[in-house]
Length: 100
Image (cartoon, rainbow, N blue to C red; front, side, top):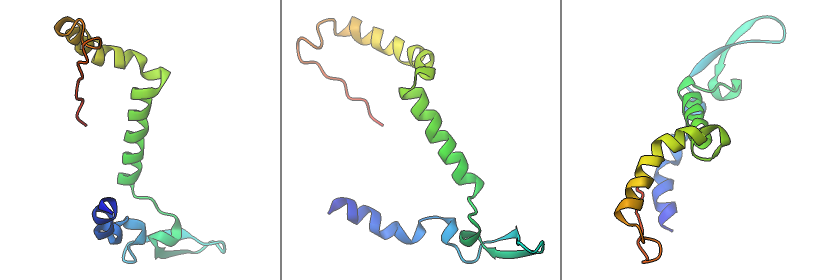
């Protein structure tokens, strides 16, 4: 119910592909060119592609083998500081909140 309350008001803003005013120039089968609504041309705005690229990079950095060195560099100092500050942390039930 809460999720529906958060999502429903934004459904009409689902993306520029639904914008009937955005037109793109496409090559037709007969060799001519014409402007058509972006949604019918399969047009994806560059900003959307950048968001997808950023999300994929985050997945690789956080979960992929390729991101292991970056994770070590970023998380290593934090983990070392926690181990020094809370040497018996897990055994004593210490927990760490990671926002975001």
